[in-house]
Length: 143
Image (cartoon, rainbow, N blue to C red; front, side):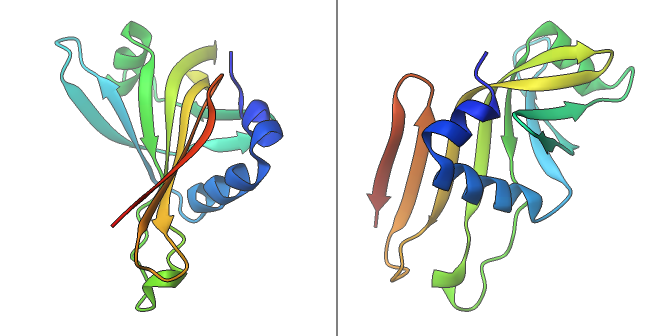
């Protein structure tokens, strides 16, 4: 299992910026897979608890059924409007992986991807930083 501890160790600067974006608001967006394979998005909350990223689900919820059937998920940070000075935008962040049930309805995230999207210092290019276990960090800039 790849926990948040691995991200903290390998890319501490990226981890700090991703966590700051996730902590900027309560409501995140969780993507799961329905029984027919189509996507479902739901609101969720998550916590950075030491070395783990954890979240819980209500008994009987559709997302709980989805995750128990297929644990693959993607989670998007709260959406924050860019400020008038676009270069000051902190960006948005995404996490992906598998949810592992630790207790009834409580899960830890086994990470497969951490992504931070933001603007460069001049606000002229989109910067996409992504980290994957075993591959490390990559940075792509786009016009």
